[in-house]
Amino acid sequence: MYYIYILKSINTDHYYTGYTDNLESRLNKHNSGKSKWTNRYKPWKIIYNEKIENKIDAIKREKYLKSHSGRNWLKNKINLGP
Image (cartoon, rainbow, N blue to C red; front, side, top):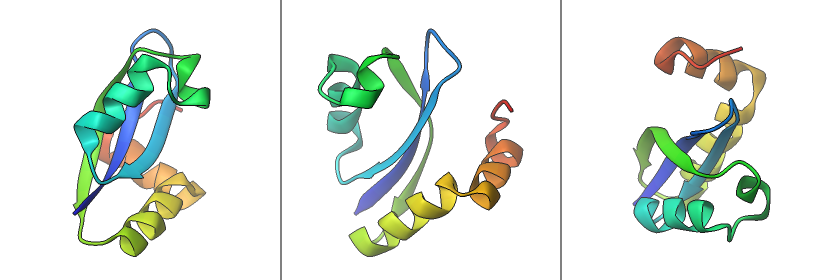
């Protein structure tokens, strides 16, 4: 089982989209500074996640959510900012 997740920085208006097979561990890595890009905007909280059956589908879903159409879908689904 894999997860697609959206993080929001608690201190700024930055978002991060990713996938993982261990959601709790991945959030801990983001918040401990072990991820280069997300280190600048920590701490993070999970604002959205989806379960995905396999890694290939998780990668496809992550790519979609990072696309223009996917960002629009997310804005309507979870009320993300501009």
